[in-house]
Image (cartoon, rainbow, N blue to C red; front, side, top):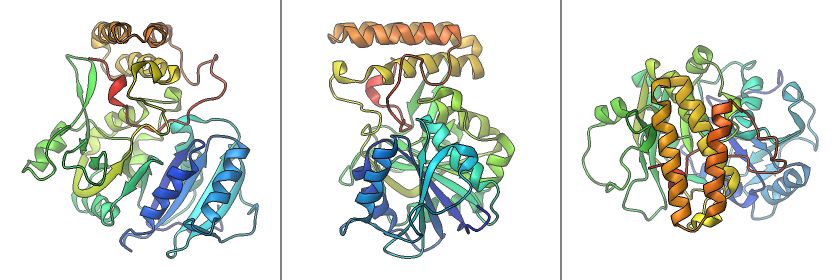
Length: 360
């Protein structure tokens, strides 16, 4: 990427065959405040057909992009992790939109790291903004994140996340808190009215990580703690990253508001039986891995919480997902990491765990 200039912020999005979501996200990004300047980097994990569809949809007459570079723009392909890379631009202004077609499903962390390996060789940028493809930030969302990181010397910064742009209630206020005695994560501010008063300092003390649906990470933080841990593949990689950065300072930009439609990438569903097996399996496998890494004394608690969730699935007439929980727990105890060997074609992984999958 020697010939590529990157603005103050690199926005990284990992997609999986969800071009409509990405298009809507880019439309929202095109309305961001002009400062800080940003460029967008997308990893398509869904194969060449999904990559071609994404390019076509973004360049459609109603799409948010235009072709800035010639088709098949030559560049260093991130250590071979991308089969193709295309350079587009937002119709609304200056930002570049770089889209890489992953050679394989890299998972959520792998998709982010594929672009981080490129960005690490480029000067000028101050931080990255990791966004789920099914998010739509408001106009001042990035500016507020950037300001909190710069003025407060925060390593990572979370925002206010809503389930819809008409919601009066908060989904996340800043991010996640890990309850050690329950061996589970909870969303800070879940269900609170958007307009109530709250203590920003108290939110920041409670935070163990921003929500992976929207997390701003400074360059100096990445250089200090390293990239995301790809061994999770999907689920807990955001919380793991936040825990590793907590001693450097986590912040909450309350004026940064992001609408998150939740679950279009992970495939979460209202019906317990309709939740994909992979999501259930990895949520519980990776929960074991997470507590072993950061809070090993709580491992028995975590196993009990997963068993309780298995029983809940059984009561809700979802025996397949009851079994997926048990398989995930056993795989976690065996130390399995990465993409499961039985899984050949699946989800890219939008970070941020659906409520249906949370134990407890």
